[in-house]
Length: 290
Image (tube, rainbow, N blue to C red; front, side, top):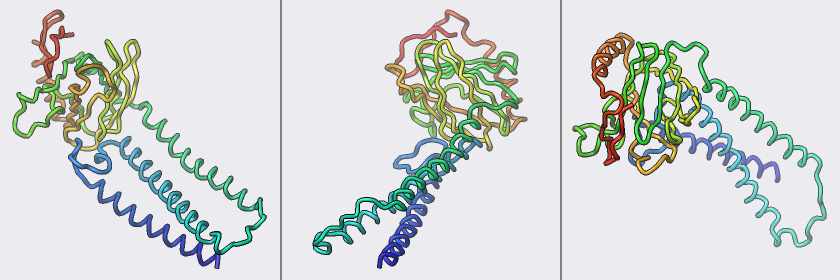
């Protein structure tokens, strides 16, 4: 009788896992590099790091779902099998060596199974030892500045476009006047720092989130798999205009990237010099250009 109940419990667990997996796959089907209204699941992966993050996320969902369904079925079975009406004389059993070994060893094995891919991912996303180019990111209150040391020191600032100035098709709170541009299929070392308070450079589709800390340079890396524009935001509460500090990363084929570099050098060669004042987005106070 016990074996039959356990078989039924296992069948329910497998069925529940099938339904859950189908819902996760359906929820993750939105093809967009920015948040969507009522979106479920994560944004589609556009880099090797994000692909590995999504894989580990899905693995953990399966593991935790199996555990949850198993515990639920076990609780329901125990409440039914050992109810007072069916057991007027309670058992005096206090220990079961085999069960105690199982509930000690099995969770340990589960944690080991989680730890191995987790540590591999941490080391994978930490840094790249074969960087093709370097991008320097600096967080300010409340905008970003970018520098390309490998492109003759090309640098510029990136401000959010105010809602009143948005053009048709541009995204509210996500569009910027100057996007950071990188070539597709290139290992880009990203060095991140700050000038005032802590910020966070986060782009979901690329699987990158790293703090910009004053007086410290943090390092990460990205490699964008396909052309497109990928949006992110500062997700470290950094002051009154924290919500108006978006990130837009545009990935171009290498030939187009080279053309963009040439145009950008001409465009930003006449940028405001130190001490000149520029009005930032969202009604921010005037900020001296860096």
